[in-house]
Image (tube, rainbow, N blue to C red; front, side):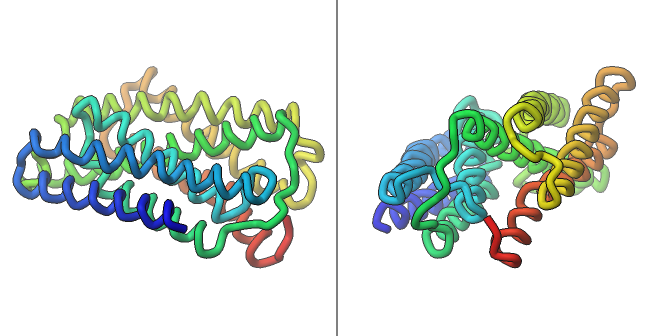
Length: 263
């Protein structure tokens, strides 16, 4: 519990420093957020490791999976922000990760998680990495949309200075989607190879929605390469694909585990 509280507090400290930097338009002071952010990520991961040790195995149920996706998003934000690009992303990601970690601490622990062999664990970890990466891409898409709208309306807000130029932000969006798409492809392949009864009744909708999301992200990357899609088109495709992915994984886990009380 102490580690969780410290990690949540560090996430909030990093968020406060980023908010202050964005308000002041001071890019140099923004680097102070890196230390509490990195410590928060380490504490977040340690909280899961200790919980798994006490439970005797890795817990990947709803709140645990949600918290792990938040951990992945925070880690990616720290990595991207450390290079000086998109540090302002932490204003959204860090409090969201803190909330997910707190939810896991309050509601998410399972006393005796079902053991998984290495194949299913590989599938699960690939899925969590894919969701975290593509969730960050969805946030990039939202920022791209907000930036484009502000510039079209000639509303030169102070927070715009915290974002990279449109071309750079768009390039970062598609690179992130490319990495997430590769991870999602590996997730689907390992699911086909390693998950028994993939098309069982309780997995049909999850599989179908995941494939639809994969097709949407793949279509966006193809459209970018073939037709030069960008701007609003890229934002819409990214958000639509991400909604399908959220429904596929967390929507199905919510219904099965919290509503129907099934594992």
